[in-house]
Length: 637
Image 1 (cartoon, rainbow, N blue to C red):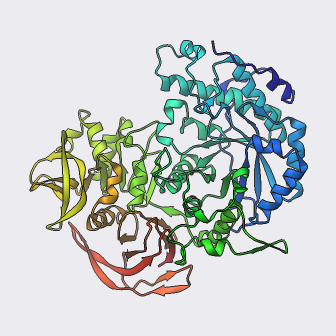
Image 2 (tube, rainbow, N blue to C red):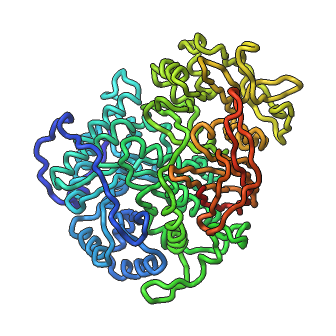
């Protein structure tokens, strides 16, 4: 059996009488409507998360006062999360109360935090909620925390990665996913939520979900159950550096994952970033921007320790000096806080500078609009693909329920819905187009899709050396590996073809069904090869997919993102290292385009006829814009 000693832990905890555990059926209280408390920013609140390690250091009044002076002299902070436990380090009640009172005396709101790890350095070793001792200890931790705070957030690790003897015996014949989901449902209610409310009926327990959402179910995270039972969710929007960090997450995930979690129960309380893996400090700023472009009401900066890290000359990117959206040189100028001039010295100033500039941008924006991409519970396949699509300029809106009566994008994840073919049929026959990926087609073969659409996913590949569209073959620098899809001549049509030795295979394909179109987008074996597609190919994909949901699209290279809002505003952002020219198209004539940050008007360059298979659908207005490296512009039309 797994044996862990919790004697010292138990002594450190506040003694609370637990009583009898209530039943799961009576315990869940669900998401709580959470209004933003007005603070130091106009459009959101800013919080700092503090690990138990740093809370422990705060028991030294000199360390606490000196470090807080450094942070608060360089940025504005509305709230601080104070952690009671991490890696078996527990902050006793009286000690935490002293720290809590210090921040409240400074006008900073406080909330609690818990990281349910036995040892984070040991491959993120979590608590085992099957082990009676560890289960008891986990409950005592939430009881301690709830006795101190009315709001408690569970950091990333409320999952289980244990395979001890307790787990092996309890699992039986179930899969690990089935066993862990059942166990964590029980732990959520009977170990965390109900004990917290028994100690403090006003306590709202919020679960923070990390950024690796496509692999959640295997470790017991349930995006259906959790948002219905916890008071709210929080979102890990850390994307760090996509090349050097071991997750290789695409920057667009910082936007996309926040939108997806908010679409679960509309109880998403905020986004959460850290400084990990950044080569240049611009990357840190970009994570904050993209989280807030999603309309997050709160930004949490992990963590207090990182806010004290020094800013170094190496953090200044090679593209600085061009007046980019994050201007390193401007950030490093002395700043006046509370009547004192302070020279920026730590990451706190980079965060403060970013958030102060960004506040004005967010004030212009309505509600996000995007291409609905359906991801049911639980589902996986073509993992994190939507973020790559966001990186080529498609505004994505991932949703947990099938969107009826509108255009929808279906990746392999959607194949987990047993009724998905009926839903596709209803959408197409109801007057709307559907786009599927090659991964979805593969997953649905043998399940009836061949009776609807004569498209076949083969086991053959092609190494495309160029792509044909509009009668022209456009070469690529490095060949792109993609699947060969078979179809019946004159029954459906290639729109873009991957070419090799004179033979072509669909990259984008159109299949007429009823009076509407099923589009097939073939995804390269390496998703990042989407960025290597020729610009005219990217333009055609954007015009087709984005044009179904937005009056705005653009022509230009990959690593440029588009965010569209329902009040005729949009953001276009470059993640490229060099300046980029783009052509923005708005589906209307005589349009005025205003650069809201500059306060200037952009003159239309031309009007373009827009056509599809039904004929002329009107004209659009085009605008030529140059984006500086790692910068964004905000427009209203």
